[in-house]
View 1 (cartoon, rainbow over the protein chains, first blue to last red):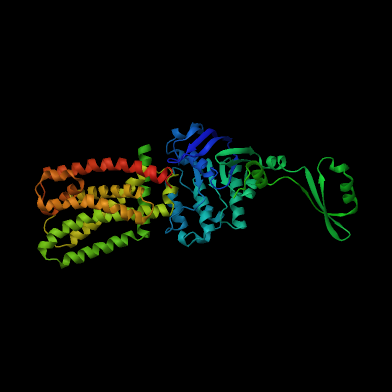
View 2 (view 1 turned 90 degrees about the vertical axis):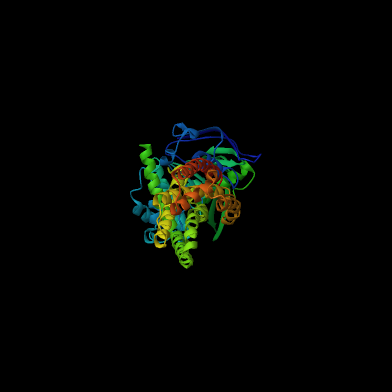
Length: 284
Length: 238
């Protein structure tokens, strides 16, 4: 669906390359996470694919055509939710969705249903200026998906949301994926990436340091150990044991036979740890 | 098919613009200013009002239009609307046409209201409406170009001043050389001549020259405004 090859880009009047040499592919129906700290090149890459930045080197093939060859019809097929809610402040949620939705050939049919889905049905006739940040983010999210696009670009979609509303958004993203939509997600929230993404790419200083399934990265860069927490003589104790031949490990055998096990955790790395390991810096 | 879709999008954008301008209070301000104009005109002796009315009518789509387009675009930019619209099928050209029509409509309505409620003799409404439309488009396009180079509303006002001087000050030449036809090659003078002529008479040849100058200027500015808007407000400018 998206095929990026040797992408390079520098901002005008800047001698520094914002994107040095990026290559990656995103398949139809895939949720692809683009992870990196601020200034790594996430948003620049997204803007290049969307077409809001021009003059790139390399190639961005999207829906079978080079990005620079697409006309405005491209925007009928994609939906974008920026990291900051961009809405008419003096208008209500319904007015915002109706006005912006009216520019699409396939005008949104179920605005009410979408408002209900993100818990804004009671606030549909309230001016957006009276919304909280979380409410604006939810409205911004449904604005991006209301015209049923094939490819979706979400920039920090759960930013500013409480856990309940973040879950609603994440559930919708999974639903969109199940309906065959392709999703390009930029974030620096590892839990979001881990829960939603089929594959993630780590980007730092305009270069990709790794692309893989989150689980693969976490296992590959983790320790092949398991931590067992158990109760011994009324006290909580723990042991770190190698995963290899665990069943033959006498300590493990003793714990299994003679003590009450509280937790068992394998020691795969977190995505955050993998990122630091590969890039020598944290995500935030 | 594409032209039809384009017209549909312009119609939708126009509806959005009018709703936005109404909700942001622009129409109320316009009404208030028109009312103040009428009060001032009512206080002037007939001989003065006779001259003041065309000047007020000229200032409406020009000076006020410039202020308004700056305010509208800056508000849209601050609220992120321009960024949102840049990822919809609405083209820059359609977006700008809608802005031009919305400001033309408000200017024409205000001018017709002021003229109708003023005690003035015969008026050539065709020249008046054509003059106001061409003037409104000209100054709105200038305003769009200034906005693309302004980060904030204050910067817009600062940058607007030299443009006002360049465009409006030469109109004073008409006081000294009212009959010089070649002054009409200057777009703002062409505007004033058309509007003034609607109240006090203008030859067909002179009106044609003014209209031609303004149409050519507007077409050139429209192309330029699209390029500047895309360069500074959409591609990498947000």
